[in-house]
Amino acid sequence: MNQTTTFKKLKIAILGSNGQLGQEFRFISASYEFVHFDFYSRQVLDIADADRLKNLLAEHHYDYIINCAAYTAVDKAESEAEACYAINAEACRNITNAIQDTETRLVHFSSDYVYHTYTGFPIREEDTTDPQGVYAQSKLEGEQIIRASGVPALIIRTSWVISSFGHNLSRQCLG
Ligand SMILES: NC(=O)c1ccc[n+]([C@@H]2O[C@H](COP(=O)([O-])OP(=O)(O)OC[C@H]3O[C@@H](n4cnc5c(N)ncnc54)[C@H](OP(=O)(O)O)[C@@H]3O)[C@@H](O)[C@H]2O)c1
Image 1 (cartoon, rainbow, N blue to C red):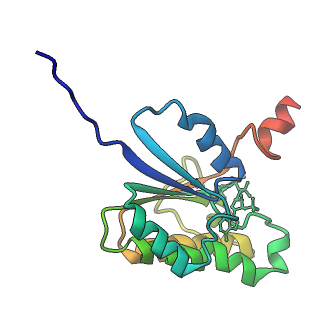
Image 2 (image 1 turned 180 degrees about the vertical axis):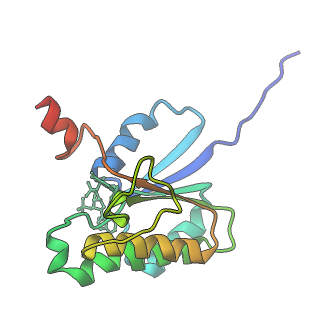
């Protein structure tokens, strides 16, 4: 007897999909047969637009949102604080508001800049944060907004993005 098994594909939305990290997710997506990815660049979905974000996420019922969108111009942020906070902090509120009381879980990327100084390795989640500068402070504020929202979330404080796209360590090392 033939048995047909149907799998429900996991649905994942990638926000900020034209960045270094976002493009890496696009690159690997073809290898994940049982995952349906939707990729949203800034042009398609501006995460600062709370209403559009909420409507779009309500329509699609994603299992996971992976937020690769960010304001990442660390030096420029000093003179563009409002723009930096709008994306790195306030837009996190837009995301958590949009998925509050749903089954959607959030994966969000933060930075080791939230620590500024290290007292030893490994650095632990509960180690003291002391962000210096607008970018670092905005990243910590984004984390705090997500944690306070209570939505199920994984926050990754990475030091580097090594990507075959854009300008980063891999290009500096490999030319
Ligand atoms: N790169 C690193 O070494 C590093 C280190 C530590 C932590 N991180 C963190 O890792 C994450 C990914 O970094 P990355 O290097 O991939 O950054 P990236 O290359 O600068 O990409 C960020 C993306 O976010 C998009 N974006 C900006 N504002 C947006 C908005 N309002 N709505 C939707 N999309 C928006 C940008 O769009 P455009 O393409 O239109 O500009 C860009 O595609 C970020 O959270 C960053 O803070 C990165």
